[in-house]
Length: 490
Image 1 (tube, rainbow, N blue to C red):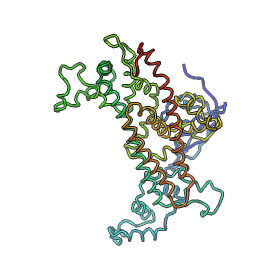
Image 2: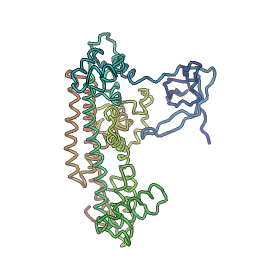
Image 3: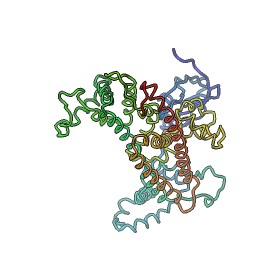
Image 4: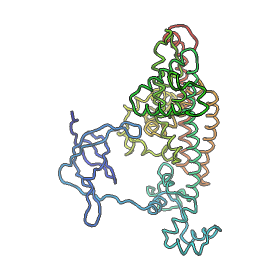
C-alpha cells in the first residue's frame, strides 16, 4: 500500500538536488529528475519546481546510514523556473577556492620566474609552445608545485577558514596559506590513510587467524569450521558459490596442495582456503555462522564455545564502517576531508538542530556506554548527544572511532602481537597528525581542530573499550555454566 502523500514547500535548491520542508517542519532532501530540467534556446538550464509541493517520504540507506528522502513529488500551484548552476572549469574552481580560503598565489610573471629555476625545462620553447595564456601558466605552475586536482578535496570549511564569511575586510586579519601548504597536508594525509589501511587489514587478518586457530583444535573447532564449509558449498547465493570455487582453485597444481586431501577430503577445501577469498565486507557473515553453529551440540553431544567469537558477533556492526577507510586507503583518496567534513553526515546536511535523529543514534550499539562516559566526565546531555551524532553520522569518522575500539577491546583478547603493532602505529599516527600544527608556521584554528578531534575520539574509544572488556569479563563465568552446561574455565 502506497504511503500517504505529505505536503510541504521547496526549502533550498542546489544543482542536482534540493530540500523540502514538510508542513510538520521536517527537512527532507530530494533528487531532481530529467523532467525538472528545462533548457531555453540559448542553452541555459532552469529547474522547474513550485513553492508548494506534495510528496511521499521514503527511507533509504545513504553512506551506511538510514535517512528519509522525498519522492514522487507533485508541484502544486504556480510553477517556478530557477536558474540551474553551471559546471565550473578546473581552473575556475581553483581560483574560487583559493580566494575563499585565502590561499595566495604569485602573479603570472612570478610563476614563470619559478619555472626558470627548473633546469629541466627549456623555458623559451616551453613558453612558446605551452604558456600562451594566464590559464596555461596557472595550470602548469600548479603541476610544477605538485598540486593535483584531487587536492581540491582538502579545501573545505572544516580544514580552512572561509574568508568570504568573515566580517573583516582586511585579508591580513586572516590566516594565509600557500599551495605548498596544501601539498604538505596531502603528504600527511597520505601517511594517515596508509596507516589506517594497515590497521584495517590487521583487523581482517587477526579475525581470520582466530578462526583458523580454532578450526585446528580437537575440541569442536574443526567440526564447526566444517559446518561453515558445508553451508558455503550448498548455498544458492551466486557470490558465495564463486567464493567457494575460487577457494577450490587456490592451490590447484601447486605443491602447497599436498597439505590437504583435495580429492577425497570432506569438505573439499579448508576453512583457510575459504577465508582467503573473503574480505572485511563478507567476513562478518562467516563469523555470524560460526557463532550460530557453536550454539549447537557437536557430534559427540558436547559443545564448543568461543567467547571471543561471540563478543565479535555481538558487536559485528563495528566492522561495517571499516570498509570506508579501507577503500580510501587502497584507492589513495584523501581521508582527512572525509572524516572532518560535516556534509558526510546525512543528518547534518543543513546543519539544522531539528535534523539530528536522536532516536536513531540511541539505537547505536555503542551509544549507551559512550553517552554515560561523556556525562560522567561532566559533559551536558545535549552536548553529549551532539558530539556522538557527529561521530555516528559520519561514516569515516565513525570508522576511525570504532576501529580504535576493536583494537583496544577485541584484539588484545586473542592477538597480543597485533595489538602491540597497533600501539606502534597509533603512536605514528599521532606524530604524523601533529605535523598539521606546523602548517603554516603560525597556528590555524581549523587545522589544529583536526588533531584535537581525532585525539578526543581516540580517548573516548579507549574508555568505551575498557567498559566493554569489563562487561565481557563479568559474562565469562556465565558462559561456562550456562552455555557449556558445566564448570569450565574459558
